[in-house]
Image 1 (spheres, rainbow, N blue to C red):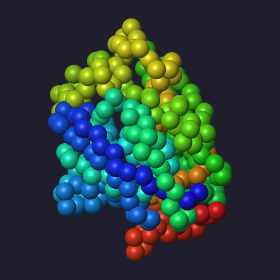
Image 2 (image 1 turned 60 degrees about the horizontal axis):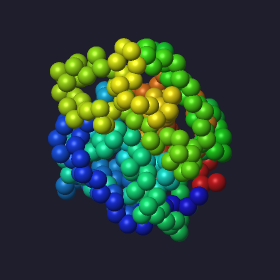
Image 3 (image 1 turned 90 degrees about the vertical axis):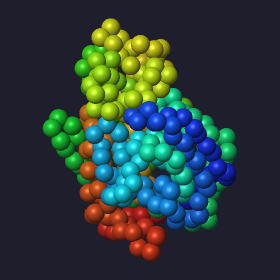
Image 4 (image 1 turned 60 degrees about the vertical axis):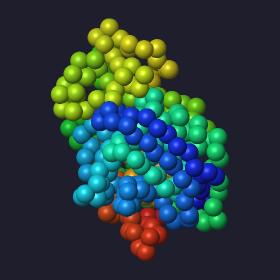
Length: 285
Ligand SMILES: [Zn+2]
């Protein structure tokens, strides 16, 4: 697989899910070895797990002075659509929520076109299993030459237990994962708002479950676990090199995913003169 970028820029204007404030983002083509970097005014923040400053509700990147919230859906779309180099220029403190899924991003990338660049993509292919665990959740990575995800989600009723097994490529991403919306419970909305979160949340940009069931029509009966896979892909994009392995995710979330990417980066990835070097594992094969 070669590195790739967009054939042109795409722009989204909207509001932030958590801040409720106006937000816009323009995703622009970038040169070989640029990777994915967010442009916040004068500041460039690379999409790396080392730059994550908060995972309590969304994935937040920062450099100590500037913060950018809810990066996971646009990162998921870039990863899922196999775009390895992009300049993501942001106006605001959060990526616009659009409809709560990654569909608009994925469709826009497909419409403008993804172009191959004359350099091999940095990939990390594990030589041995790797796992992280936390109270009742686990993320297990197994050596494989293709990216396959098996995700077990288990949420209180009315969501319950959901399972998805998917081989991830641009086609399966766009068809089976990108349209799945972010979700929450009606009773949580008040609590989130008291913490200053979900201020931009509406029934147009989040799937809300009341005790009797979903308040909107579901896009799939298992839309929740599909969104969990969408979020996981946004988080594994924070490794830097593309991760190629089998992933078994059990009730995992942003915090555990980011911890895993940090540990893998510490073990295998170094930034040297702007180019990524992977240490101790097979890359670019
Ligand atoms: Zn999400």
